[in-house]
Each structure stands twice: as C-alpha cells, then as structure tokens.
Image 1 (cartoon, rainbow, N blue to C red):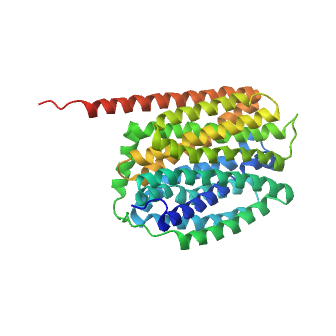
Image 2 (image 1 turned 90 degrees about the horizontal axis):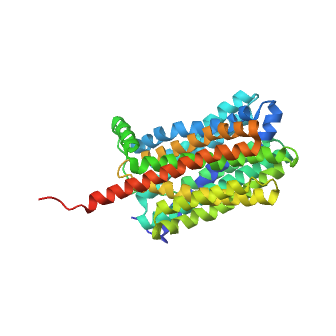
Image 3 (image 1 turned 135 degrees about the vertical axis):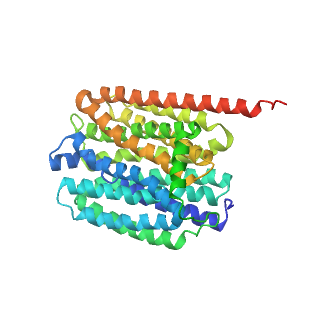
Length: 403
C-alpha cells in the first residue's frame, strides 16, 4: 500500500484533487446564475432550479453504473472517459438555444461528472494505506469545495462581464487542459484488477450495501446534509438579488467564498477521524451547520455571511466523515459503496432544492428555516441509529462464546 510522502502518493493525490476541482467547477457553474437565468427565460425559481437539479440528478443515477463499469474495465479508464467527456458536453451547452436544451445538456454533464465522482475515492482507498487515505480524503474533498467556489464565482463574474455562454466556453478549455494533465500523471492501479462478466455480482453488492445499516444510515445523513447545505446557498442567492438588498448576480456569487470554511473543515476532519469517533464528529458538524442556519435568519449581511461560513464548515466536516465512513466500512465492492453514498448525496441535493425554494417562494426565509429544521431532524435521527447500531455490534463482538 502507498504511504504518505512517496512520489506515487503525491501523483495520485494531486491528480485526483485536480480532477475533483474540475468536476465541481462544472457541476456548480450555473448555481449562482439561477436568479439571472430565471429572469432571462422568464420562469419561476422552482422551474429554473432544473438547471441545477438536472445535473445533480444525472450525476446521481449514473454513479452506480459507472462504478460497476469500473469494476469491469478499471478505475483509470472510467475516470479519464468522464474527464474528457466534460468539455465535449460543455460545447453542446454552448450551442443550445432553449431552456429545455440547456437542461438536457446539464443532465448529460451530470452523467459525465459521475464517471469521475463514482470511482475516484475507490481508487484511493484501494491504492493508499488506511492512514494515507484518511489524510488524502480530506484533501480530495477540500478540492471539491475549492472547485465549487471557483466554478460559482467565475460563473457569476463571467456572466456579469460577458455572457453565460462565454463562461461555459472558458470552462470547456480549462477542463480539457486538466484532463490532459491527469491522463499523463495518474498512475495505473496496482492493487486492483478489473474482472468482467460480474454484472449480477455487482447488482447483489448494491443490495448488500443498502441492507447494511452500518453504512446505509451514513448515506442518508449525507443526502440530508447536502440537501440543506447546497440549497441554502441557492436560496441565499435569490434573497440577496431581491429587495431590499438588490445585489448584482456577479457580486452575490461572492458568497461562495464562504465555502473556504468547508475547505478548512474537510482537512480537519481527516485528523479528527484519526484520533476521535467519526460519529461524534458528524454530530458536531451538524450542530455547527444548524447554528449557522439560525444565525443567517438575521436580515443583515454580516450575519448572513457568518451563518454561511458556519453552514459550510459544519456541512463539509460532516460530509467528509460520512463519506470516508462508507468507503471504509464497506468490506467489498468499495466503488459501488461510495457511488451509492453519492447517489443519496446528490438526490438529496436535487430534491432539497425544490423543497427549500418552494419554502422561499411561499414564506421567504422563515419558511426556509422551517424546512431546514426538518432535514436537520432527519440527520440527528440517522446519527442516533448509527450510534445504536455500532453499540449493538460492539456487544456482539465482546460477548463470550458459549461452550
């Protein structure tokens, strides 16, 4: 197994971090543009949310198929296929002429992104030692948050300065250059050999993972956590461009700098997991996010920003611990297990947007708070069930064997 500090470790972590950065730049490019696109296409907040939801839904339904494909064809070929598909889909987006066409191409973008997202963590967990993986996963998810920040901010700024199509074209060029770099840098796997003809075996693995309460509740926690986190930002965008704030879209997109708190907490979570219980870390992260959401209810910009910083810090801390929990607790078909986590994660993000934006349309920010509390309640219930299940397993292990 590869240890930290070795040349192979640096190549793997650098390549996958850049790949993670690229896919999240492309995934979140349109999120700050939702108010602008709503006005451009003359549709409601919940209707324009399909621009974001289409990509996350396309991502979620494609993760498991790509994970299964990687078991048969190898992790690296699937990773590279996804990365080189992203700029091609970006070109398709550039030439769209209607909202429907744009939504469809955004769904294709989600499918392309899934090829990388569903396989990269399995590649790491198979090649790196447990200690090296615990550190690497924090860096990988930190790259997620950085990609999300850059994609959103540049998307908003380029749209204000030029046009959303120019923003898409710039990301096409950047994504292609990044894919070329990873093609030459990412080492071939040594600890995994693809095996074909195991389609039904992998289907059984999916069912096995879903029946494993030790990891399934962590998947549910991840979904509810992301439903809250990403969509609180979407609603905040509409809140800031509306009266009485009336902030331009490009300037409002700067709220995504608050994601930097998540970049920091992702790195800290790896160190937390090596010394303390991941479950207690998920609980602490969720509490921080909850306090942040309540703080953001104060209708003054400093409190909104402080709230977003706390939401980002807590949500990424929880996500990193839940994600690594699933990848480590799954004893077989790890790519399928991590893909299933992301299925729950992104379905939560897709559906949560419609819920919280509906709350915003009907009851403004107080309604969003009420809807958010429902999701937080679900996370705490999931944590309780995980803790209870862990205690039951510990009791079974320590029970003496009867003669």
